[in-house]
Length: 301
Image (tube, rainbow, N blue to C red; front, top):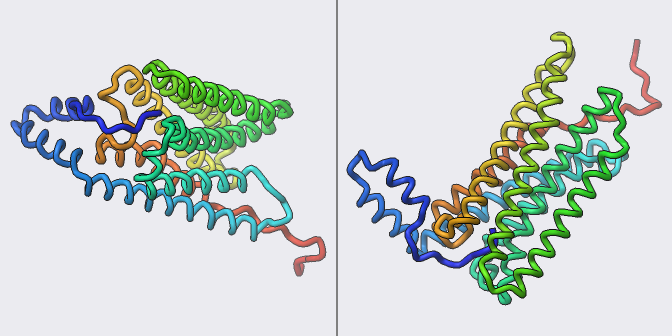
């Protein structure tokens, strides 16, 4: 996910789409429309500004939810829930700025700075949602009376290794003039996306199974069951899609899904792998923590 040049070649994804619809007899018309959109500056501007608005909206929702949580339980400090919403605000805010000022961001020199600006929000997205995996892992370990001391250090170590490797790749890309550096960056994104998907499958799946074993009359069981199941499915799907598409792009440059290749694909890609998952997860996890009852308050009996 590290190149932002305009592709003048036939797009492999458009070939897949036209092949699938060849039986309709409208392939030539579809190709003409597809190429017309891809070469239209107005379409590119419209898509990038639409993405900017969508990311800004999700970022605003995360900020509002963070403020609401802070007002509800200010005495708890920076809980995992608060950090998760803060990181969602930052990630989506960066993407909104990136697409809002795309004409400047995608023309920055040296090219490695352009790549850093494009890749950094993706790394932060990984850190944001692996934080949710950490939260579920802590709940599962506590419920099973398993030790939790190593979970947070493991989260920071894994994320630290990911960022160190990515920085090394950026340095390599700065001094390397070969396509291998770009392929390496894309494969690395594919690997960490697969790792995030596996994390959700392991701990989301374990938590889901554990909740199903609770007594049916348990308070909130059904709601938590749906919450864990939906979030696990959404996050696994978005990370697996990113993993597959970035891996394909690493080996076929005509399949590059990065910006400035085709506005429709750009819109679909970022909607599927970042915007919709973030919006859906924020909606599912919208419940505020209960208010803390004052020690001086005694209900009338």
